[in-house]
Length: 199
Image (cartoon, rainbow, N blue to C red; front, side, top):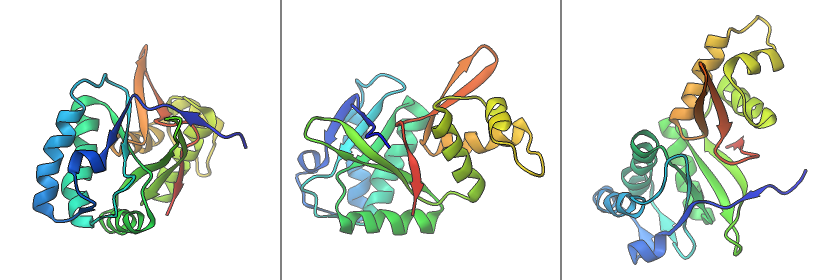
């Protein structure tokens, strides 16, 4: 399998922005959310933004919920930009994983290289089997609409295009795929090529 890489539109250093090695507490997370929102004011729509966690020792689940999930939802809904959590250490990854599983959510993690490229993207957290299948399918085709996915990946019993659309809408709401209109069809593609789902 080829090593897929891409450059984010912007990289935000979490250690520099917070000036802290340990990020803990819901109240502190809410305050940090404002810093994140300010940091992306100049970012164009349909962009991928890398949040770089290098030199951050730990981010607790309560801080992550108040700062980073809130930012992911705001960025997706209000700005149509897509945060990716990069260079997350084992301790913070465990906190994110526990939070994601407990809340039924999912977040995109990746490695940010010294060359500024994103690689090894992973959707960490909870997707049901149908949503995970939809992510694999759209990653396989690169970009497609619901009808194309229904034809390319038939299921028994037969699944309608509307059902595929519902799955894709969930992936879009979670910030895993981008969408665009092409005529009357809504096309979807992963926010990073090669994105897979893990636990």
